[in-house]
Image 1 (cartoon, protein in one colour):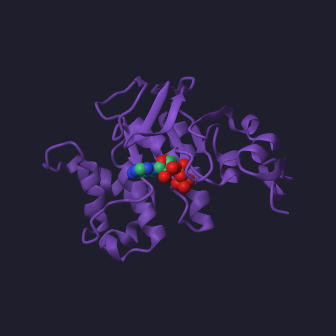
Image 2 (cartoon, protein in one colour; image 1 turned 60 degrees about the vertical axis):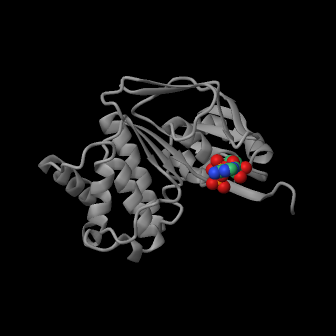
Image 3 (cartoon, protein in one colour; image 1 turned 90 degrees about the horizontal axis):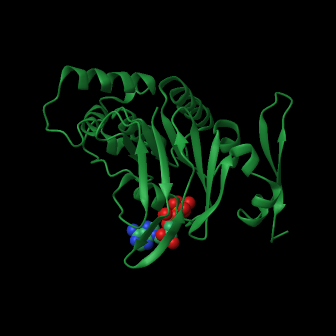
Length: 252
Ligand SMILES: Nc1ncnc2c1ncn2[C@@H]1O[C@H](COP(=O)(O)OP(=O)(O)OP(=O)(O)O)[C@@H](O)[C@H]1O
């Protein structure tokens, strides 16, 4: 089983330190981990640092990797060329880091992911013609087609309708359970975090403010101190944890 551990991780932009001293326990495959924190806290920066496109202090320790590229990263803003068709965009993501000789397996992997994400009707459409939500699903496909063991998803449901938000969160949890993937999702929806993710990391003021099982970490105190809302978690009649927000912590 794959695992990821962060040791004293730091990151800077042009000499300005954004993150420092981020250490985690070993995060095992088979689970979904939320990355939470206010705007500008450093969630995307932490993903860039883990993925290796941003250098900095500390160590990203991956164990149990079965390939040279076990991590896939779905950024918040995808840089896909708009003229490519959806099929081509997903195929190109599949070919990352390899010479451009497309195999039968590459094509069937693209077909598999397109079917998995219900993207059949989009496959021939230019990426530039798609809606924001449709483009976001293409980005998910571009990450999954790489068959990663660890997938870092930066706000993957922010542009999706409610049905697709729930569908994608459910799908990712299923993939984690069935295939031993470690899924990390940066998100602002704490309700989704509570409902769908096993553990969470909370980033604030350039460091790790909390880390542990999501239901234990998201307390009224944390919601007030980090997210500036008076709120609590209650289970509904179906036993699903729900975030109940009473009011803003400062503006009444
Ligand atoms: N390319 C960059 N160059 C310089 N500073 C950057 C760059 N990208 C991000 N920052 C800064 O780093 C800090 C963390 O930004 P980051 O995008 O990681 O936050 P975030 O938690 O993902 O925010 P959000 O929830 O708004 O997406 C912010 O102060 C931001 O202004």
